[in-house]
Image (cartoon, rainbow, N blue to C red; front, side):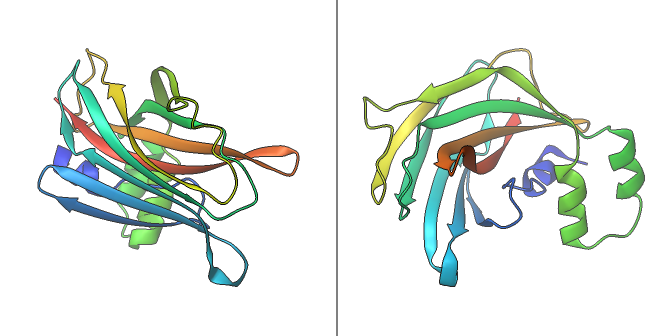
Length: 182
């Protein structure tokens, strides 16, 4: 499996109820993750634009657009890099079977992931918590650590999360941005 192939097989979202569209043009990718409310209306949207290939030690710029049509405030923007173990025994067994794209995506989602470094929190100059029924457009910068490379056995994802309160719990809208690190 090549690194380009890994980029195309990320599940992109954590919640199966969320919808995601992904477009890769040149060296940049755009993910549009949507959480729909009652009646199919968009309640929350996260659009992420990021490079597809990065270098170890590079600081990358990620464009972020948020549309919040809920009565909930968004606490912050969180970002963290994770490594996906493609050599996982269960995943390798399942990958040898014929599967539908949806089954493949579900299997990929179950692969163990290892957090690399710490979660970076962005408050964007006191713009966050983002109040209910508002939007945000801006960018964040994320430092790619050294000593980690994408290979046939390890893929990388930059996980962008918008935590918000849902009743007494903290819920999240999440996009998983696949990265090839060289």
